[in-house]
Length: 418
Image (tube, rainbow, N blue to C red; front, side, top):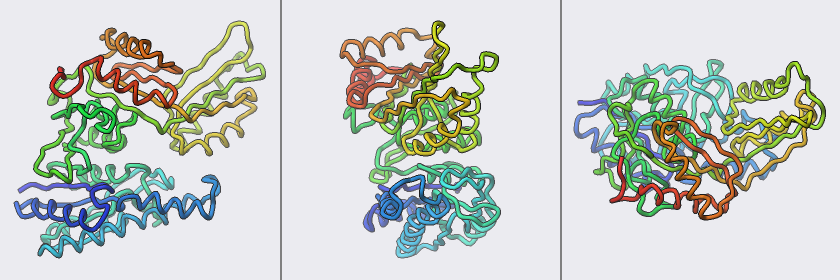
């Protein structure tokens, strides 16, 4: 007998028939004698619908109370857990639903992007001991002061991995609408190859650069706690999918995958007044410190200083959803930043190539730029590291770039080599 945590995403519980299918998968595991805890997301596009309702009251994101948005969005998962629990019970099995608070998921107080601090799993342990299937609302938790919080985009993945660690689960199965992790989004590359396994590190880079299979924070949590994660399809449950595990247990791919992120924006600041020569990075340091305090992630960063000019230029990428807060922050720090001219670009794509030891493989960098050059695709920014190469370009070229690079490195099904 094993202890399992299963997570079902929004597409897997989009309607009642799909909820019944998910219940059948859960019951099949319980019938084999396993202890099962299930984490579930809101149904289909419920979260988008709830956000749209809030937009009818406050069109500007900055005007909405983060606390009340959490109160609103958390209702989506409560619908799912109740319906899924009923579906399990209809199949003759005992089940009990839990909100994040009832499951003992304690978070910090940052509304909208709260991080899990601890899990008090007593109630879940008692439920499992009674032979029940525990059905937990993903994406949400509660502070020590009993304030409801949400975990940000993809937060149900984080809930599932955190519960796996707290409960000592043998495995965490992430059920979604694809059969695993692929060398590229199958919606862009129809013959993309599915990876039988991939390392935590590679999956973390893929998730952080736009692959939508898992949330980056959940992968980091799995790596820190050595939780074995398997990405599987709800609609082909017999398929073993992709195992996310330690790098010594997974193949070493030259290129594990290519991700395309269309959800980024680039902010460029050009200082107009002379900066403090003794502390030229003071304003930039203050800006990024404040971004960290607000839990706003930045990715590609570039600072340019021209010898013949007293000014400097800063460019960095963030998620589009963070734009209003970042723009307000820059305005508040305008003096220390040199009263910059701010330019915002949202019509961009960030294409990232993920692998291992890329800094020792110059042929990969050369191949990426050769592919883009032959197609006359303009490059706006580049960031390289040992595990990824990211290229920023106009959004209209994103999908084409993925296809060209995928073909250049023979990543398609039947031609892929490690």
